[in-house]
Image: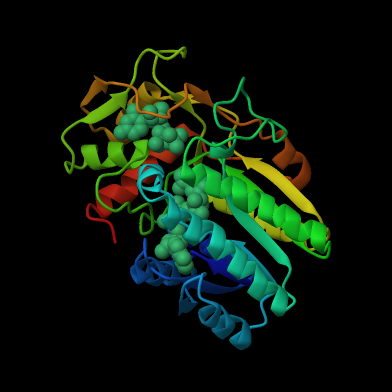
Length: 335
Ligand code: NAD
Ligand code: UDP
């Protein structure tokens, strides 16, 4: 089975490419490298011990996509390509709607032209907005608080409509919680541009000496220690969820919506402590005001993923911290 991985040079994509190849899938990576480096693919090649087919192109460009589908008989698409910076999406909403929403529409049109109707899409727990309670099940009400989140909601709706119009489509909407960690080899990992927005890369960059101090955004939430609680999931577990989704897609036609999380929530200060234990490094921090748009608590009920995909997270918080640190320590400046 040949799989097109859009955004396959990125953080989650590169880890998924490793597992897909190890599971015996043929892989074609498609990426415009707006937030990734070809070096990530070179390192994936070292891990798996084979050359990877990479096509540089943009999902919004039909010609680029035709080039892929003409050259390869693609059976399914795992669609990671997209922009993901929440703050930037507030400042430049049209850029996000063009890239994430329009880009997906163009991709689906070209897929249909070549009779490729299987897609696994990277959605996010952000589509639950501020959940009324936790753990979060897939049937919770949906909402978005910023253009990035809205782009995910729109794409989910678009893919549901695509299926309604032609139920030969097979659609899996994977709602990720908070991916962290890196491949065991320490050779691929998360490499954010500029100052990291997310907690784990900020912690690792502080530990490695690139940042002075971590700002903890708020200590007055109604949580175990007042800091925000999230469901951190090891990126290799997340990647494995995609392989399981692809295995499943062979035997069904419908839309499936699945949470990928561990079901456990950790506070910011618990993460700092776990990281210090795993790395032996002190992470200086200061309490700062709440970040606009943040919620107190968010963690998954992952039981549907277990039932439908026979998938569950296997790596705990210590391994997440160890692997994040190994990647950062060996690659202080990223790729
Ligand atoms: P990433 O930025 O590392 O990877 C995205 C990749 O897509 C990059 O390699 C980028 O160059 C490529 N890309 C972007 N726009 C493109 C376009 N128009 N055409 C071709 N390639 C394009 O991000 P990631 O963390 O690996 O996230 C992958 C997906 O998962 C994204 O859709 C993201 O929104 C979603 N997601 C991420 C998180 C997270 O916390 N990392 C959480 C939930 C959902
Ligand atoms: N956070 C923090 N300092 C940072 C980055 C994040 O205190 O520099 C907190 C944030 O307020 C939230 C948690 O860490 O409670 C996870 O934030 P992240 O941006 O990684 O993920 P998301 O907000 O998307 O869940």
